[in-house]
Length: 186
Image (tube, rainbow, N blue to C red; front, side, top):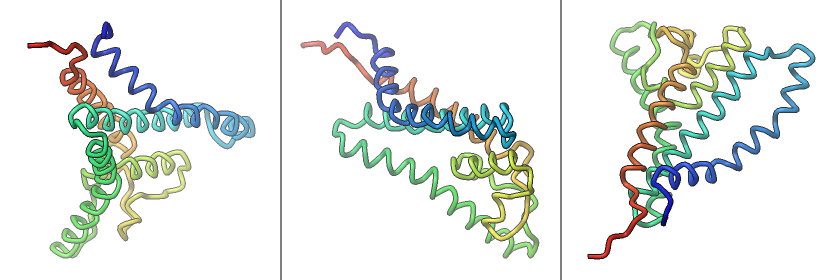
């Protein structure tokens, strides 16, 4: 094929996330009405949509990465869903276990956010909403205490967006290196 590995990878990524992007774009009128009546600021809308798009790109890049490294689509699908399940449920479960053992050992509630929550997209989304509502809603209340989502320094959603950006770059670069559009006959 005359296509370069970069164009193949980016074309496949854009086609895989096009439906999600369409849903994000279609939701703009609803957010416009909320913005019009003063329920959300333009900055809040931008942060929310940037988080949506970056999360969609991350999950698409992970799926693309596994599809370039595994020959069979069923194996790559299982690996993709497994990685996504770990990011969403695994990090939450491991953080809860860590927090429980910390409280059991010390007898005091945690005063910091477990680092694994920074890579969890659901914790990042909850943190983003908590920052936008400004009502003291805390992701950490899921674990039984009221430590703020900002306890570790940066908010969970900002840490998650940085992590997502790194995952996108790494998985796309590895996919570009792995794919070989030109078959050489020996």
